[in-house]
Length: 380
Ligand SMILES: Cc1cc2nc3c(=O)[nH]c(=O)nc-3n(C[C@H](O)[C@H](O)[C@H](O)COP(=O)(O)OP(=O)(O)OC[C@H]3O[C@@H](n4cnc5c(N)ncnc54)[C@H](O)[C@@H]3O)c2cc1C
Image (cartoon, rainbow, N blue to C red; front, side, top):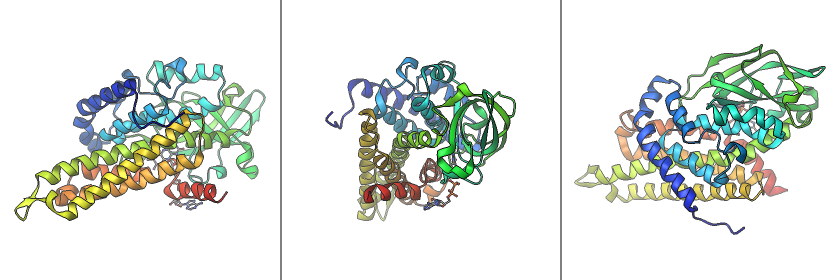
């Protein structure tokens, strides 16, 4: 039960494998994917072959082997390479959370094989044009019709979106009853009435897919509802509580890559006859960056460890996500500063890292929403 600060041997071996994969397969291609905004299918396939497609799946499907700490460690490594490429397996994990917590064994058998054995993708479809932070206010309806539900509504900003084989969709039985009247459904994207609208062009994470999902009289059997009728909001919150440490570790990955690049650059770059690393102004920036990264790492490690101990803590998950995302934004900004004019140019990777890092303060609950959660917890 004691909290350790080291990885076990298996986790260290996994970390080495993923780091090598990132250096060989992701770093060389990230800039061109960023430029083309093309979905990185070849890299997604390779991540699947490494067993990284759905690491939070039940053990029966070869997931959870390394625990949440191991899983976050892998996310951190992948995001040192490229957040846009890494977000695809991260979105699979988020989409699978309501199934993991609300699904029966039979529902697991329906959901996981396509992701874990066939390398297909999944997407978490909650956000709508009129409801992002305010999940309780969503409008997509699920109307009971015998043994079926009829889903109608539009979801936006859905990661993996049009490339997904299956969705977890949150809908309401009666909007006037707020969060008590919502249910989650597993929806096959080949079902009649499911279509995809526009794909977003984004500031960062540009090669990831962010789609609009349209549900037009989509007929879903009741066996695909997760949990009891009305369990949806609780499952959504549980999903966020357990996935926020992933985003914290993703933030730490982006920050670490930017820090290391800037540190090495500072040692090489000369100004006024010496290396810029000799200037205290640069040293202080590097010191702040190193502190931010270390603190972020400790926070996601504790949050992930609590999950592994079955002690899910909404406040710690929110703190890890909020702190690490804010910290990553400070770190990438300093990295660009340390590179001066070169930092602003696409020839160097830190400007992409700065653009990528912004989303970490927005999705899976904005920085403000995390503070709302933490504020409630400290005042309880
Ligand atoms: C690239 C990308 C990928 C995404 N992937 C997914 C996905 O896979 N699945 C999915 O369901 N969604 C996804 N989202 C949606 C994302 O989770 C939402 O954008 C986010 O939760 C914020 O919601 P919103 O955009 O509607 O902003 P709003 O909720 O409109 O917020 C606007 C501003 O108001 C602030 N605000 C709102 N409410 C409060 C409050 N109570 N107190 C203080 N401040 C508040 C916010 O912090 C923010 O600054 C994605 C978004 C993007 C951009």
